[in-house]
Length: 247
Image (cartoon, rainbow, N blue to C red; front, side, top):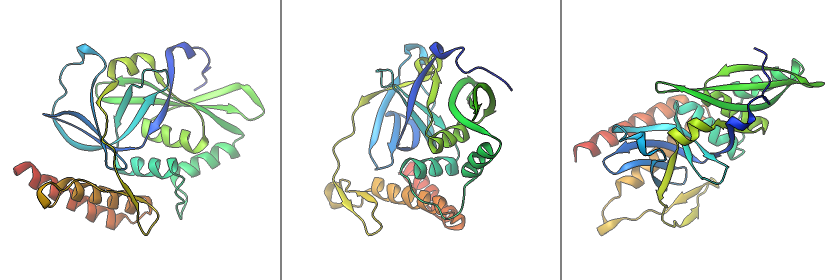
């Protein structure tokens, strides 16, 4: 549908993608797991937000507000969009074109340019987003499409365009970091990726280390489109978390 994205700029705030892989809520609060294995402990920005129900770790896309507040907006998504977004953020080359690359190519061939993406509203637990396009030879002519935030944000990162969030959503649903991650030591693995040296108290195996390795392997397999391997790693991760809940 046609819509002028300049009409309500004051209602939106620019944001950036945080390198997070999953979120969970539990007795110890709301936790965001970063790609490098660190955890961010957060609380609601809105005092009326109340206590979040406990839920198991879920893949997520996390946006940081760039208005000086540093608020984080976690959006729970499927595993594949999360993995593909991390690949795009880190410029990981994928052998075959993803659907987001195909969409960008189609937009260009139709004579349009991706202008920006907006996370516009939340209905119950689902967030909504809009993708704005302008005519390549006429910025005044624009159209917009309703998309899932996971798809819209993936397209925005690949197109290098702004990602904006409705201010009401940012301030009412946003999270504030209350516990900064501890410094970590990096070592370079054989594949050039960074690994995290996690603590092993009392010399015993560290469950968090096992969990991080499984999550990492699952995401790498998904990015490389080895879906059978990704499913196997996901099953192992589910089994590990199930056992941990019974300890």
